[in-house]
Length: 568
Image (tube, rainbow, N blue to C red; front, side, top):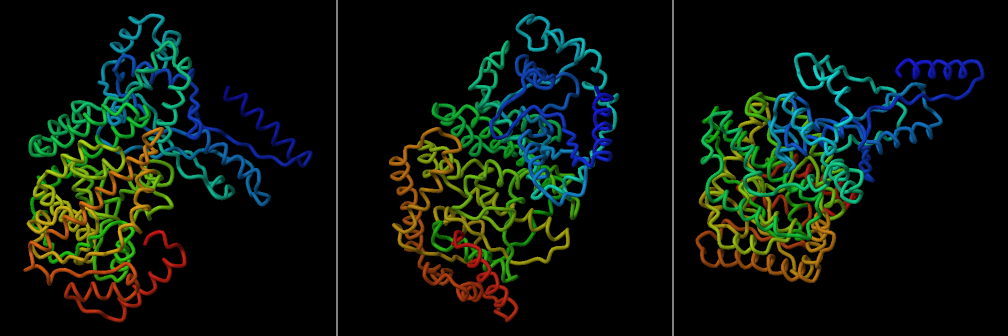
């Protein structure tokens, strides 16, 4: 097969030289998924093996399952863009832009709510053969046996050489984004459920993700055993309660798309795993909790009140540090996190692809999202006590429970998380600065916030509620469209109006009950969110204003207004 392809290329190359025929040779990778349509080549050995793994719930040997894949859509786009480029310089193209691997201590199947256990290849084969005609591998054993030493063990596997794709990078403009493995999987699941006959002899229902609490926390239990961590400390009872309620209400939400359950499982499981890595880092470096956080600024105010624009202006001033998206999830192992300046670009690439092509893409055009300054909700999300889950999934029972909870432990964990980020930045050589945090939900839990941050400075942005609620409901609507085939917008509007009203009422009640803190507050109206307001915040925080900071703020504001007003 390899020689036949080589000979065809030689013939084409000779025709190019002799007859001056324009030639482009596209060498294609092993492809069996299409991210846009979800079409899946189910007869290929890799897909058959995956189906058998799901059927038996066994992973043979050291088989890497769903580590990295190519996307037929990306290959097609590369060939099209190169073919349409009249100024291309090359003839041979390796059309490979593999998906970024999902960095995790767990198998991706565990992360997707499809728990399987590793076993010996011979045991896996025996289990499959017991199924007879119902096994998807019934005709594939000669092939698998022949290559088993290479495919199912790491000792005999050849080295994995990178394929040079320089020519496509030079002649394909623009080069398509690296495909997102989670998005490709979800598209394939959708296609398989729509075409169950393609899955035969395996029952397509085996692809349903499990969202029960035991499936979601199993990786955490195993990792705690592996690293010698106290599971009850990593997963406190209140946080387990929140996760349990999430799993139960999501599990009973029958209108959630089947493929969306894999994304939800990944979201929850990855956050459980991040908790393990953070606690292991704290165990190895207990001095992290001594990292100082003094007089942080908290920007309160609903989305659409100018809070995001103000947050970015303050960050641009150079006076304050802000939290970045890539620091708030998919945490690396403690060993990696402890290396100053460690290149964690794999995780950033995955997050970027989630934004560009997948799980965070629903926010595009409504609010600014990317690998930069963003809301500091990692502690809430990873404690499973966050309105984020209701925003995405419409969980009225969970929302009602959340309204009755004390957030003292959440904000203590918030402080610990920020101390970890401060510690990591300082060790990598970044200048230490005071923190500026921003989220509308901080306004709901001010007593707990001030217990963990007793010297906090509070900035509240204001705008008429009727001018805010429509854009907020649009954001929630687009979030839920990722998970539901239909969204009840009348119910959504009524529910979210209640959420926003309670948020405002909570902050106003706290202010009324605590007049002694009045000098901590700075009120900012939407109409006044312009260059000079950031200087007012800096001055309110007790810091000096200088020409350099003022110039940076003005330059950022001018650039932001030129590009878009969507972040305001």
